[in-house]
Image 1 (cartoon, rainbow, N blue to C red):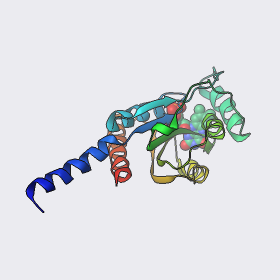
Image 2 (image 1 turned 90 degrees about the vertical axis):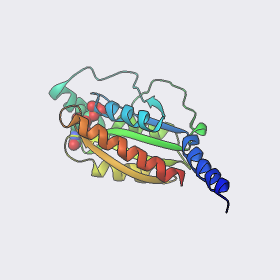
Image 3 (image 1 turned 60 degrees about the horizontal axis):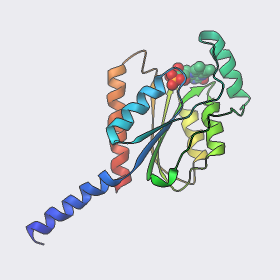
Image 4 (image 1 turned 180 degrees about the vertical axis):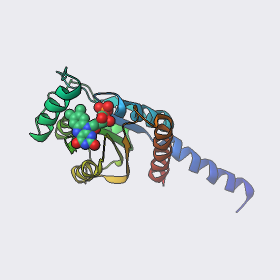
Length: 182
Ligand SMILES: Cc1cc2nc3c(=O)[nH]c(=O)nc-3n(C[C@H](O)[C@H](O)[C@H](O)COP(=O)(O)O)c2cc1C
């Protein structure tokens, strides 16, 4: 193989990674998942899609936990803002959610009932106060018609270790992008 051919192959490999179209879909009530979603999107040059509910829970603190926890435990179907989403354009999809009452957040659950995600490469992330293990397992199962490339969780990134957790999310996203390009 000649020297020039080697360079061409190297260029092709780099170009493939750049050409990979990525989307970050997320819901966030108090900003943690939004922070991580935006870090991921800027790292891998992805588009952002924020899932929004028609009627927000206005409460905060205990009342938010109470009302949100109830919605989550009863798997309430939440009405979502009507927003166009064209998944056809994307090869790689990152999906982010907060944990609510040990379960997948009901807004994200309602979104996944409406929008079928299939045959994509997927990176999953979740924000929580304790552990997101069960939620990530639930998401993997819900999205089993896709290739799950990895998952990550972040404990209250707005409250503590913000810089380190954002850095961790960026690194994770880059790794997922590289896996997706192979
Ligand atoms: C209604 C409600 C229920 C929650 N339940 C849990 C839980 O079961 N386990 C957990 O680790 N964190 C729980 N949390 C904490 C959130 O997952 C955490 O604050 C997360 O960072 C919020 O993400 P967001 O700021 O993007 O909305 C709960 C928060 C709310 C509002």
